Image (cartoon, rainbow, N blue to C red; front, side):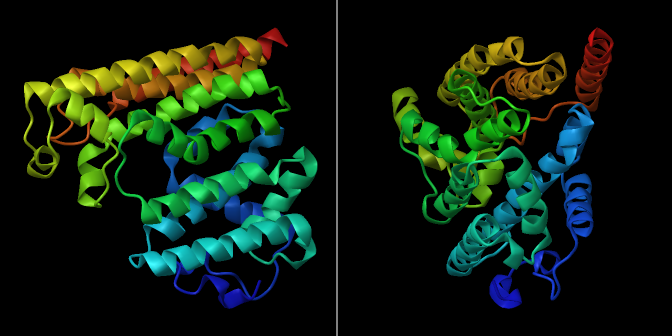
Length: 308
């Protein structure tokens, strides 16, 4: 791909003039992962050291693609950039020696070593394209379809890179990842509304007698509370159904999977603590709760290390 293919993207994501070495590309991905999303950087610490570079390259792929869609104001430009990113993905698989962007130089090593299916990366890109054209959701099923592309591939990538290829495990992972996606939706109702998006399903709004104007006007009612409570309960049930995956993987990976699941529970607990009023602002997980989760994960990782 020519170096100007990402023209219009944030400057830090532009393709360099010269192809970086693998070490330079991996360092680029590591820097992005450690400076753009603290939770991801912390979570990867609990993974086996030898797979961390793979997760940093996967994160970099997702982070850049997400920003190409969300940080560009013109949807037409965003779609062009996402298409260019998709072409770079195909180049990474088909003619990797031609890849120049550090993400794909690093990602090819992950693809080569772990034999990662292209479909998982392509599905994520499909979700970012969906965000450009679909801003409201009518049913729970539509949200599940969106999560099939936006969230589930991430869990499947984690399993794949760690050596787990069994579909029953992937289906459990799908439940956890979909639930985490939904928990974020219920947490971010106000922020999404400010961006012109609504993930609260119209079907649930109709069922509980909630109107669109209540979101824009921040009008919280008992009916709105009942709707969010119902959505939270359904999401929590899905999260716990999939959470049994931790019993079927090695103890070290189980620590990371449990950390993500408990993080989802903490988000839902935060919403519940606000009596389901997600219109006054974004319910957050307290620093004390985050430290408690990390301390528990650290102890579990130590136990997993001693058990080997």
